[in-house]
Length: 176
Image (cartoon, rainbow, N blue to C red; front, side, top):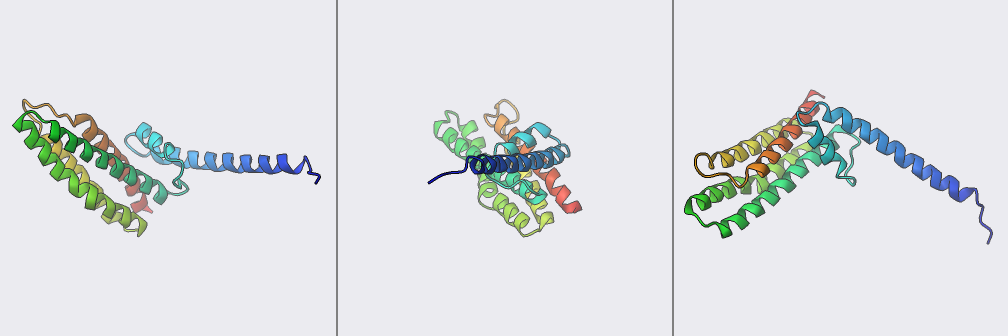
């Protein structure tokens, strides 16, 4: 069987061109959206670190961000549970238990409801869910005021920044 040497390179070139065009279009969309958020770098790195999810429209970008918040909140809840088991002091253990009680509904209900709401085009409810999640994270962090330093400050701060980015994207969806 004789193969044409022209067909294979053309086909490969065509695939490469399509992939680069799609990447450039997605990159432009991501860049445009992230410039409208309070944390451009976090937005940009979060969206670009998730190559399998579609970034072809604002709704897809919002879903990526909310799912990323969910992943970070789930990881933080696991971290809290590990800290509780290792906690030497009653005061720290009590504050961590409070934070676990704050994160459980975020992970099990609030953020999954936000994802469902975005999928259904109910962006106002998604915004409400996101706002509720950040209130719970803030309440958790406030438990460590005073002499007890928060072992969750970096994690809570990052989740709050992700929420701020997602909120900005959802506001863009609300504007239509």
